[in-house]
Length: 324
Image (cartoon, rainbow, N blue to C red):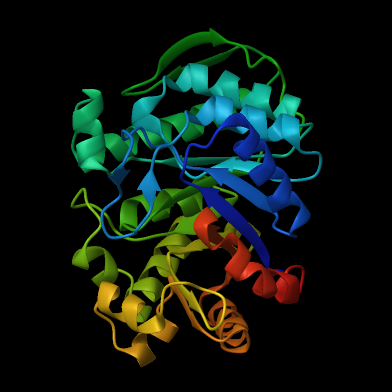
């Protein structure tokens, strides 16, 4: 099954109210499907090392709400809500409320968390990957159960122990807002295949930082493995899952300030490999469009997210491919 392309912007900065509203409306008017909000809590001036993204993020829930209220057709999403940072029962109600306020335009992205210095800065224990992933699974299962029932819900897991929960308000989207789960390791992507509507293929950041290991975990061969992990989890429902990925390293001829050579040095990839790297967009508009079509054929990626710093440079690609 070949899905039409759609594109998203992920916001990393914390602008003023006016700048945030203007960004949301610009994304809406520019043909992008979705505005994703990052769920990061690093202080001003901090960076997610290796990506070039300066993180001064607004809190996820109010930022999503403001974007929803400022737009009329734009989808809004969390990419990703770190389940370590949110009480699952409260997050379930908050997300349903945003779906109501947006009149059914929410996408719920869940992740297990990975940025170790952020946990340290917030005073949250950075537990083992297995425990963080189990919390993410239980949060996803609880949301799906709560949104899918008009009756009281009882859920008893390792992290969530809830009796008599009623999901109010009811989400506008039935049976629930699209659920996205993402990561780069077998267990997380297997859960994405099992439970999610959208599976997000990302770096394997199990080390707790973005670095050389992130790049080496995302080669063409490794990306094929990741898609297979989703398939293994999904079984017969794989064709129902939309595959999303982010393009982090971007240099578009005549449109980007950063050069292709600079991206090559940053990633440590030779130019030929860089142009085929699943998380890069390097070359002319024609070359990048052809490459995205190739990746859709090879991996199934039809939903592409880029950072807000690249919005203007990336516009010709959205204009050409969105909906095709």
